[in-house]
Structure formats: C-alpha cells, structure tokens
Length: 231
Image 1 (tube, rainbow, N blue to C red):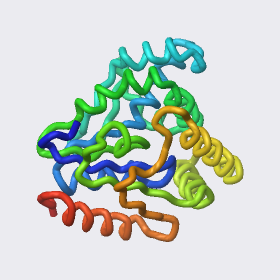
Image 2 (cartoon, rainbow, N blue to C red):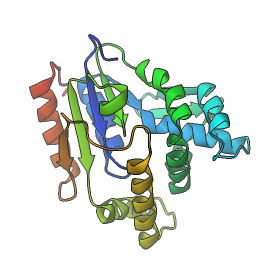
Image 3 (cartoon, rainbow, N blue to C red):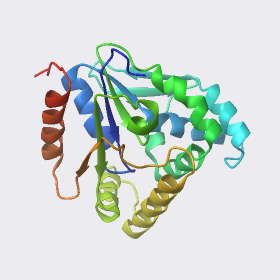
Image 4 (cartoon, rainbow, N blue to C red):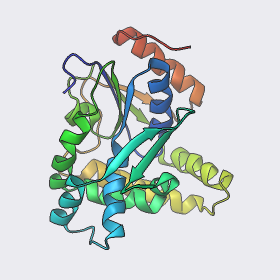
C-alpha cells in the first residue's frame, strides 16, 4: 500500500496514452514507475514461450508467480524490460500480445499472484502507477487517482499511426474491433473490472493533445500531492 510513500494511480483502457504520460510524469517528478500492464503482458509472453495454454488459470498463475523480469533504465532514462535475461522491447507492445494479456488478466489467481509484486514497486520518493486497477485495487489509498479515457476510434487511430510510423502493416478497422473487444473483456471481468475509482479524476483525452494532457495532469499532481517538479 502507499503508506507514507505518495502514489499517483493512472488507470484507463488500452491505447489511451497512459504509458507515455506516466513515463513523462515519473521523469518530471523523479519518482519510480510501475507499468502494471507490462506484468500481464510478460505473463502472457512467458506462457507463450513455453507453449502453455492461456486458458489454464492454474498454469498462468504459476507463470505469474515465477516471472524472471527486470525493469531497467538506460543512460537516456528510457525504460528497458528484460524477461529471462532477454530484452523484450517492442514485443510487449504488439496487439496480439495485448489481447493475450487481457485474457490472462481476467483470472483471479493471476491477479492475486501479481498483486504483491506491484505493491513492492512503491518506494520513496513516490510512485507513478500505470494500469487498469491501480486506483481501485492495488493502491486504493493513492493520493491522486486519474482515469484516462478516449473513444475506441480515436485510440485505434493513434495506434494505427504508431504502427505505420514504425513501418509495420496495420488495418484501422481491425484495430477498432480489437480495442472494442478488449474493452468489453476488461470492463466485464468478475475480478477488478476496468472502471474509475469513486474518487478518481476522469479525463477524456479524445480531443486533447499530448501536451494538453500532460499540462492538466501535472497541475493536478501539484495541487493534490507534495511534489518537486524537475525542469
């Protein structure tokens, strides 16, 4: 739990820009960063590497409990994720793996296995927690809870542009369908469904630029939490 260590919890659906925002916010405040979604993606990736069935809750929980993962930062401050001694990089950001992670995250046993690991990231001077149940389950006492949202069409368009810029094939209609299906799975699961915490500040980013989102969130952080902003 947050205890005496301040936590800013940022929740929201896939493709809403949480990851980019949270990395930026962690740098500006000099705080630690938890990408909880990466833990579920890593669980799915580790299971796939071992050819384990994603629909087997017991096996998925065992994989989650034994994840050999490191979150590192290179000289530029960019984050690096290493699974079993191998840097996974962009592999974690594929749409296919995202869907697999959503499937695995629906299992109560998997969420229980990863709960303590997520809370262990809470260290001074503070933590930026990026996920889907950070404010509702993992850090319910967070000093600031944010819930970012945007239309499925806008999120798909952002993802489409990212893939095209990387020289990868992408189908906008297929991305809209995948995002809508993932939203339904994440909001409809029995344990820790995707929803804003009762005291969360909901921010619709559909019509906002990255700079506008950052400005609003930083203002809220300064207002709600004692922070030192790094120029």
